[in-house]
Length: 235
Length: 235
Image 1: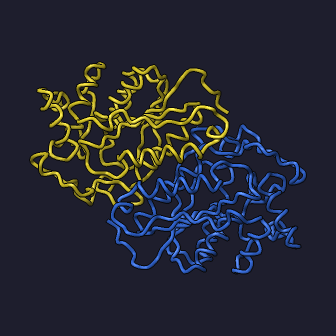
Image 2: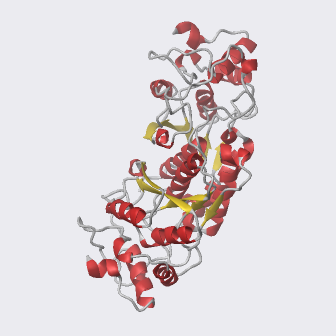
């Protein structure tokens, strides 16, 4: 059995995008020793994992685990099926309100379940996930009520939930923030957004497409801060 | 997007052991078109997957998916770490009441999360899992309160939870049964237990060790039914 770390550690879900690295910076600032976890799940934007690795190193994590889990085999999402088209728009106002085809079935449930396993082994009772319910794409598993229900379940799921006095907490520091507020918070914590990749459908060199929901929401955030997106200007 | 099946289908977690095949037989008898899901998770008893494949075929499932997910990378369990020893006893009375070293961190949470993804894609709102809270090994993620909490979470997690009128149900038909009762129910449904493997630490040819918790609980069940275990006598 892996030794339990006596100091406060946290598991942070890290995708390589803007939100998750801000979440990591917030967890670090709160004093947690951070263990990052990323997922190679068959996403068309696997390039984000290279960014996640660099960001994990840059932010001094205690460890970084990339878990292989083939969600593409289930199908049903434009993020994992190259035969489906990632929706593109000219402006953020064109993004629909329905759950988009980029939704991956049960993705955050699977990711949080694996983060829970990792947390148990490293002795952490704190998991950080950068979900956001304002400037987001309408995914059901980014909503506060989903997170609350997952936390309740997680507190019954593990050996630690029976033997450790500390409750398991799912932290979502970004959940009520706009993209502009997330960027402002990250900049105040020294996040270098030129290192991040948010695009669902990047070019071979990691160049953002500029027109998927993730690109448009991100551009809107920087625009509202009166800034250019450094990942776009530098690529 | 995979087409939604109009008839009632269910996803059944199938390990190749005694409990899960009984669960499958119960789901079939209830009239569900069954999609089986198994996991190659780094378990030392991977031989069970060969049994799962044969059982899935024998029971006429609509599909059988074996998902690769390396839980061994997290460590912390004798089931996934060959450097740890699977506890052995002479009698079932020697099995301790503490959570044993064969507990795999967050295993059922991960398995049910992946079953939830599979269920969403095949259009099923019913998941069957053969957990059992009587003759079991004290795992936290086999308890009714865990299952209820997972079901509540699952009903907030997916696109289907927002767009499908039918609630998602986690069925645990074995949860309050003794091993002997499970065996009696399975025999009444025509289950051939000689095809199953329950052992945590089988020999290379799939021969049960006869002394791990899973072997002892199973032997007790057959003994209470006045039967010999056909998997032991035939191997």
